[in-house]
Image (tube, rainbow, N blue to C red; front, side):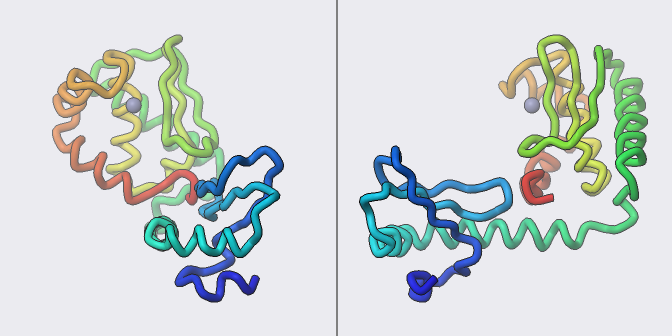
Length: 188
Ligand SMILES: [Zn+2]
């Protein structure tokens, strides 16, 4: 599309969509890493171009970040990559059982499956859900996600109490949390 020629970003990562009930131009990130510009039907693509140019910093920052994450994912060590879904589930389940034993944590049920945007979650009924994709992360980050969800069995939310408990059972938790931000389940 011609309109992107003036943009310092790669056009194939931007998708323009005209929507009937859209009130103005909005930028939103999609699960596949593309940036979606939603616009009302009455506006022209030229308006979208102006909008993107005005928001070029934001657009570029987002696209750069996605590229970085994708690059990092591509370079994950192969040995950490289980070859089948069953291997992944087995690896995560075994690790969870071990960490639960070591930290004296009890949980109700564990479910390992593919999640779109989260590494894991904990429900009020005591069930731990883990994203199968953590089996491809560096081991310390997989452990971090598992420990994080297990700590939720004791402390809800992410307040001071949570982090105190987190650091007690995993002293390097804060640094690992920061490291995990370099990856994204959406693009793995
Ligand atoms: Zn949490």
